[in-house]
Amino acid sequence: MSKRTQRREYGAGSLRKHKGSRIWYLRYYLPDGRRIEESSGTHVKQKALSLLQKRLGEREQGIAPAQDAKRLRYENIRQSLLDDYAMKGRRSLRNGYITSGALTHLDKFFANKSVAFITTNTIRRFIAERQAAGAQPSTINRGLALLRRMLNLARIEGKIQTVPYFPALKENPPRKGFVTHEQFGRLLPALPEKLRPLIMLLYWTGVRVGEARRIEWSQVNLSQRLIILHGEQAKSGQPRILPLPDELIEILQAVPEPDRKGRAFYQGSFRRSWARACERAGLGRRIKTANGFPRYQGLLVHDLRRSAVRNLREAGVAETTIMAISGHRTTEVFRRYSIVSAEDLHKAMRQVQASSKMIDVQSVPANVPPATLPSAPSENGGNGQWEVAKTTIGLPDNGGNLGEILEPIACK
Image (cartoon, rainbow, N blue to C red):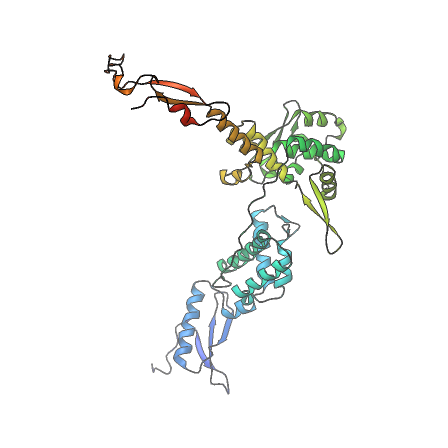
């Protein structure tokens, strides 16, 4: 068989030129039978053949054709993310939408854009736009995390080959807000009565708001003074027991039996009620903004979770027990909630000062010079020449110099 009539190996693809064109075109088939034709961009046959071999190698690796990647749009990878969330049962997905709000800003910036448009420079422009709008670094980073996940899914599925570099912003330190027992005593009466059981549960147990709202009356055991939180209701996926304080027990016991059905705690939105109550209790304030709408600044509902952890720790409860109540799975995250207040620091200093009032020092009789120390054998078998007695000396109440006290003591 002549070289001219030799048949190509099946699946090896081919090169061809269109009529009137000097450019070589690649032609090959995908495993699903779809024919791909792509311009090589060169009139040199060897270069076009090298590109064909590269495309065939990508086909074997399951990588999508370059022309498919060019047609891939933001909406396509966005839907892949939502499908992935739905498959894994992520709680942040509700009614086909991610509740964090970060997706809204991504949609606004990247809508109808090709995935090839999403480069590091484009990501930096997105960050600059969000910063100009006053978004916090942590909020921007959460949005970038969603976009990165979209692109990583596209790469895993063979739709794109690489994921661009994502610059990350330095986030502010975690909030340290908490409420003391005295402050909570002012806050609770300022709240609407229907909200008080929920807020009390958050303050005493550190349970998350979302978890508390899923609790049914059938899970409330008033005789044993506890609530059993099911695994599917908890963020960690682990069931746990929430012990109830006396005051909350009294409120729940006052609920008529016929009304103890369905969800046990308030289900509606209470953002405005919370802001008004905190303002009355002196724990927050509403600031007028340029658009005329007030913006709340002060104690947050999530600060009750931090307060619960702090209160339990101050009461001497073991760290493992606190984590079992609050639902923290790692000590790293738990310790972010372990707040130290200024009063805690003053308390520590008072403890140090109290312990330093009595100091153990080595001393000998002040009126005996070292040269005339007794040489009688000691009880422990020594010759007694350099034997010293351990004496406890108290610091003067007026805070005098320790050196003034030790000066008359004979030393070696």
